[in-house]
Amino acid sequence: MSNEELAYDFSPIIKVYKDGGVERLKGTDIVPPSTDPKTGVQSKDVVISQEPAISARLYIPKSTTATTTTSAPQTKLPLLIYFHGGGFCIGSSSSSTYHSYLNALVSEANVVAVSVDYRLAPEHPLPAAYDDSWAALKWVASHSDGNGSEDWLNRFADFQRVFFAGDSAGANITHNMAVKSGSVRLVGVKLIGIVLVHPYFWGTEPVGAELTTPADAREFMAAVWRFACPSTSGSDDPVLNPGKDPKLKQLGCVKVLVFVAEKDVLKDRGWHYSETLKRSGWNGDVEVIEAEGEGHVFHWINPTCDNAVAMEKKIVAFLN
Picture 1 (cartoon, rainbow, N blue to C red):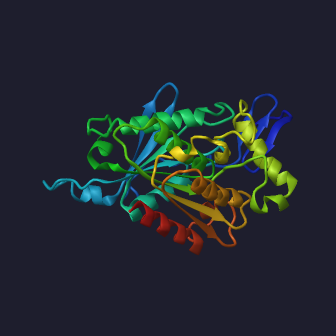
Picture 2 (cartoon, rainbow, N blue to C red; picture 1 turned 180 degrees about the vertical axis):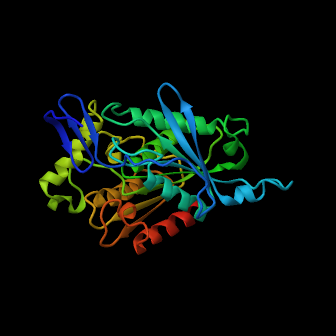
């Protein structure tokens, strides 16, 4: 905590003081990896890189352990790579929210998951999170021949059935990693689809109902971006506004699932993304699902509500 004057106040996310102190207001509660008593999902933490510091939490479903004692060959499972949200400045792969979510999703979908822990702004401004996420993807891809450093990925992951997913800023990362995967190509990995939950996209020109969005709410969205990415050209930076990205049509997957929430200030960006993608020349299918009466990342606040359960079911079906 700091007694100095505030330099930035992005409550309820983060406060930064003029003396350099950083106070994260959410996403700081962390839990260790475990064998989840409810689902039987096992997790463990792995170091991807010491310098810069990049790690990930790996998850395998109960079905993988059921057959390990027999001589039967192991069935390979779809591989989900998850990028957490938090405005690029809060959250981690070990936060209780994400840990609970991935335990449930891995169990329901019967997939192997890698939850990426990237460096956070302001200590590590963007593009650090993008660079770390790409490094993590390359590390995951290094297991595609079955000879990587991590046994779980070698044994259980099907690298021909790979999915990326994320929420909010993590959905932004997911999209940008999929574009890069399409333009640079991850050797040994076949990206099938991506899931964007309440994606953090923005732009200078209002779209949809943003014309009636209060000015302070619009400024908040733009300001968080400038804070996380001080080197940015602004709200029309191609990584924040996909409509300005000439590489959009190179999106490296064949299907996209976008979730938006009726009361989320980012809602129209999700719809706009879908329309822009369809017009870009990208050859794939995109579906948008809107949750009525809900706000931004409502499924973290109330994970058992009907809309959250429906979202999980839809993601499970998408991954299979």
